[in-house]
Length: 199
Image (cartoon, rainbow, N blue to C red):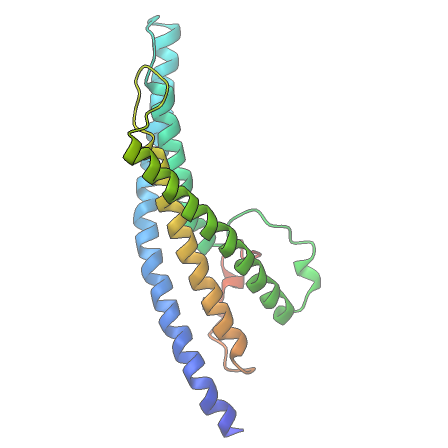
């Protein structure tokens, strides 16, 4: 029995280290969430001005729509890691309520692995799109013509953060499944107890 406890110690220590890294990533994500909230407010102001300028002042608008889209793209992708940490993405709970906590933990871990594979591929493709747009000097087809490296860069950065978040969740899940009963981390830190923790 004592051998099992000793062998579990490295897994518990790894889990603690991974949770510290997760907390560090969350600190960065929270700061970025403030920027994302400002970007959403900025997009709302830009679109409101666009409507006012077109219909009241009868002015042509050439930059407002693209500026709002760039702000929305940045806010959406850069905030994705924070939302994943909270497991706030849309999920279906009909099956999860029927499963035991252990089976649910395995199911969540497998979903995280599949999601990690998809997001890792998406992040890689986003960086290739960014690099092509940057090197070739690609711009949008509007009269304003902003560089396309801006939205591609925001998308790549956000997807990379999301991939790192998922990688941490997969690693934490693997360590926790290796722990014997009674050696798990405290329930307050488990992903299943986060808001929307259904995966």
